[in-house]
Length: 467
Ligand code: UD1
Ligand code: CA
Image (cartoon, rainbow, N blue to C red; front, side, top):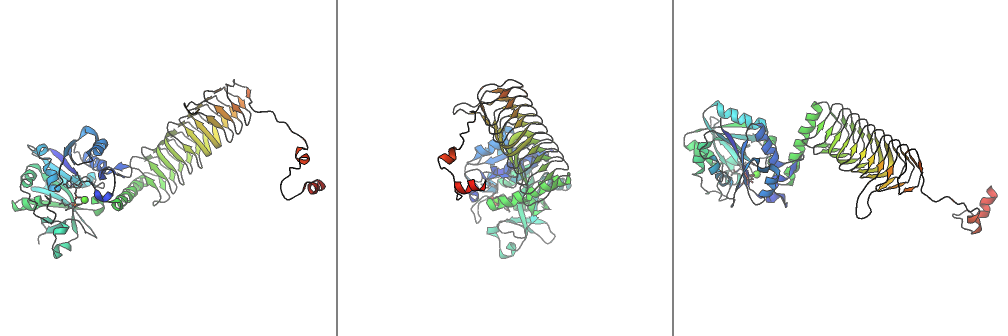
C-alpha cells in the first residue's frame, strides 16, 4: 500500500505573537513540527510533503531535505493548502494522511488506528475526531441517526443545534488519494471565512455516495497549538507522559509538577530526580544517581551513582561516583571522569578532570587538563584568558594546590607537586616540587599600637588591661 502524508503548515500563527514559525516552537524539547514528522515516520509513512508559508526556512531547518516542501503563496484555507500538494498526489493510488502541522500530540497509534479503520471497510476517508468538553472554535462532526458521519461544520458556520455538538474535527484524516483529488477540485469558498475548507471534501465524498469512517481518540491527542497558553497545555501533557515513561522504567520522580524532562533524555533505573530539575536535549543519566533539587542538565552524559545537587551543566560529560554541587557550573566540552568532586561555586569549562580529583569550593578551571587525585584549594583560579587568547594549564596527577592560588595559562604543574597557598604561578613547577610565589611575610611589632590604629569601641588601654 502506497501511503504518503500532507502536513499543513503554511499558517503564520499570528496568535503565538512570535518572530518564529509557530510550528518550530518546542514542546518538551522538540519542535512541534518534528513531533508530527516523527509520528508519521513511526507509523511507517516516509513520503511526507509539507505545505509551508513565509517562515518556511525555519521549518526546513528543523526537518531538513528528507521531506518535500510546497510553498503556499496565498493562504486561502486548509482545502487550498492541500490543493498545493496536487502535483505530489497525482497518479498515486493508495492512502494519503492529512495532518495539521500544529498538533504535536498526534501519535503513531492514532495514525495507525485510522489506517486500520480505513482498511476495515470500503471507506473514502476516515476522520480522526475527539470529544471536547469545550468545543469552542472547532469544526463539529455531524452524524445522522445511524451514527454515520455526514459532514463537518466549522464553528463559525454552525447552527444553534450544531454548536451543541461536542465531537470535534481534529483536522487529521486518511483519504483514498484519488478520491481526495477529485473532491479538492470541487471545493468552493462560499462560507463564513471565504476560505476553501478541507472539511468540505467529506461532504462532497458522501454526496458522491462514498462512506466516510471515523475514529474517536482522546482529546489530548488532538490538541492544536495556536497560542502560548495551548503551548503550555501541550507541554504539560507531553511532560507528564515523559515522566510516566521514566517512572515505568524504574526512575523515581519526586514531584511531577516541577520536573521537566525533554523527549530525548534517557535515565537509568533507581535514579532519583528531585524537585525543580530540568533535563534537556540529549542528556543521558546512568543508574542510581541523585539529580536535584533545582538542577538543569542540557545534553549531559552522566555515569552511575553520581550526585548533582542544585547545579547547571551543559554539553559535557560526568563519570561514575561523582559529587557535583551545590551551585556548580559545568560548561561545554568538559569531561569529568570518575569519583570527582566539584563543589560549591566551582566553574569548569572546556577541561578534562581525571579520577579522584577534588575542587570543593570557589574555583575556576578553564581550558585545562587536570590529572588524577588533584586537590584544588578553595579559591584556585586557572587564569586562562589574557584578554586576547584563551589557554589553560596542565596539572599532573596528585598535585596539591593551596588555597587562593592562580595558575597562569600554559603553565605545567608536574605530578605530585605542591603549590603554596596564595601563589600566582607563572612558570612550570617540576614534579615532586614546591612552587611558592608570594611575598615573604614581614611582621612589624606594635605597629598598630604605636600608630594608634585600633578599631572598634574598646580602647587600646582597656584591652591591654584585660591581658
Ligand atoms: C481546522 C479545521 C477544523 C478543526 C480544527 C482542528 C478546517 C476548515 N477547519 O480549523 O474543522 O476542528 O482545524 O484544530 O479545516 N493552514 C495552511 N494553509 C492555509 C490555512 C491553514 O497551511 O491556507 C494550516 C495551518 O497552518 C494549520 C492548519 O492548516 O497548521 C489548520 O489551520 P487553522 O487555520 O489552524 O484551522 P482551524 O481554524 O484551527
Ligand atoms: Ca488550528
